Image 1 (cartoon, rainbow, N blue to C red):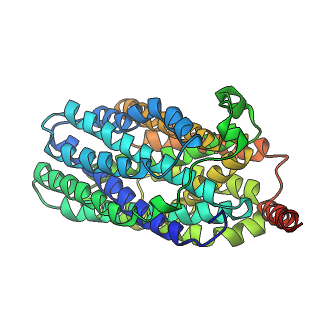
Image 2: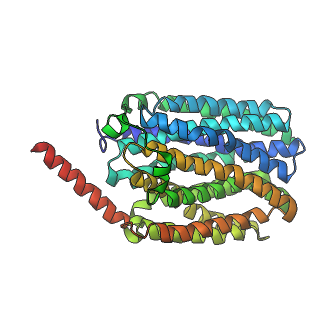
Image 3: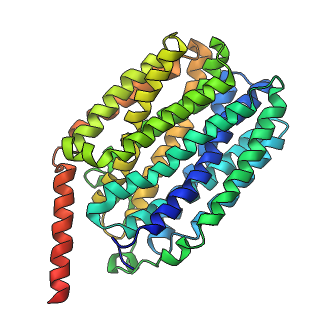
Length: 413
């Protein structure tokens, strides 16, 4: 069945992604708490969070190349195995260096799963369906980000943080394995790439990066993911300093994820109202102000309101940056373009937590949130300028529908 057909495969992919992302979202704050229990300071927490993205940084483009010239689905079970193993082995690690290593394995597994699943969505969606389908796909990530921190906070709420954080990591590993139950029928949906461009020479990376819209999409995605990552890694540290319990920190992180789900459920009408460029610009600008606001010593209820609005704004960036990159990339290099986007994400996940750790050690734990505000402000400006020639999303959908109708008429003739 070709693009635009039955979307049962997308629902199964969302469910699998929900379990995989839930495990990662449960494991990452648990890793921070376990590192603190083992004697880590703010710098060490930032470095461990950065190692999560270090291995994927070197593997993203080769995996994207492979996917452009082959099938997407085999990457999904490989990713689940690596996520599950990385979570569980982090729970039994006895040193900060070992925890960092298994955190990197977890990150590599997440990369495999995301490249395979995003490429599958791009390949199986008609052009006018991509904003919607990528939005629905990222609901799986938000569901995982909603449940994972709540589960981690509930388990780590006790006094023996070293033991309870290890238990949370072992449970996260088991939860990731549940994703296998939704993967088997996705394998049937995947087909090898067949276009002339995909069978021919590989498109140079430089040409992909020079395509209008690709650099801007990568920067927006990097900024949004870095903000989510720093929130996940450093809100536990903020909570420790302000006397906020792990249970409440987990609820706050989940509130942000719930707001991202709400955003993606109403993404299509928002696109029709504002268009892709304006929506990205406004939400990045608001997110910049709210990230800086997290640094202020506000009451918990004010922090909750800020995180809810911040989650709604951050929920826009990931699906729209996927569509921007896919539609801007040369034919036959879309998976590689998505992999370059993920490389940018992982570069941000290496640099942002490591930089946040250094800044937090020198200027206090609130400083990384101000840094994120500046990065999102830059993304808002890039979203305003880099897509100046881009039509609003509604026009793009109409154009995609017109192309699909023309293709259908040509086929009938």
